[in-house]
Amino acid sequence: MAATICSPANAFSTTCVSSNQHIPRKSTSLFSSTAQEQEQQLFYAAAGAPSVDMNKYNVPLTSCIENWTAVLQAETSMQSAGIFLKAKDSELFVDSLRYTVRRSGGLGLILTELAGGRDDGVGITIIEEVVAGGNADGCGIQPGDSIVSLTVKKNVNKGMSVEEERVSVATECLSYDATIEALMSLPEVVSDDDEVTLTVKRLRRQPKISVKLQYPPSDNLPDASIELFAGENLRRALLTRGIKLNDKLAERFDSGGMGDCGADGTCATCVVSVGMGMDLLSPMNQQEEQILKKKPRWRMACKTVVGYGMTEGDLTIQVSPRRWEI
Image (cartoon, one colour):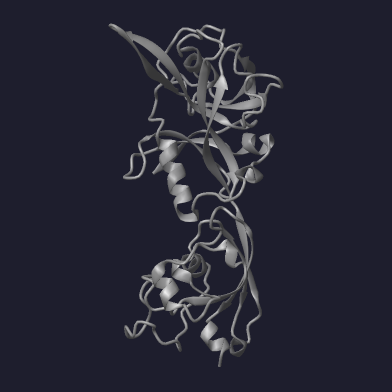
């Protein structure tokens, strides 16, 4: 269960982050910094690893300001408890990215606080501008991103040897002041070659698939158009939108009796014929390939994910393809 903690009002408190500033260190570890990675893995699990440049789905700074919010998330089997950034708009998703930036001379990032003023330091702080010619210029960080953690390497003397340690601070859902305190709590810069790894969260729009549905001529129904998001299971998505797939006249492939197999991928009663957009669908598994080897344009809707690889485009499918052959 998630509860909204704070949402942006008007942006304020703008400054350029420089590693030469000094602010007394305070505790800023409000949550586990691994949670965003768990969430991202869950999001990409269905759609598969991106096969396109994900920057095409970035949204402008103005949209980021309007849509960043923070929620309190209870612990689940898939995610740690904590305060996390979320998107207000359901058509946007939160992505996690890592960039390495040289520290000497400052990062060259202008930060803006969208929400804050709480005694506990919770808020929302984002990057308003990447300074031209600064250390972060050209690394890939975008205005609207929010820094959620920073990691640096530190050499520590251990008797007769020197060992390298990693020092990290978490900055997700912190106010401007708390964010600066966390940044300045990192070990001092000792070399021009010192680097910091920034993990940022970015708002992106979800890739969309425009689906044209064609029904058997005997149904005397007009074509229908719906829109799906990348990563949606085709059968589940169509059923939740009131579109029935299972043909009552179709014989089960597995001779398992009446009805369907409940999305186990054994009966083939939810098959559709793909007229256009086969490249937008997840690859067949071995079982589906064997069952449909004589029908190269058919797919089992229950085993098909649209927008595979985070792609988007147009998809045309025929419902109940067996009835088209009558």
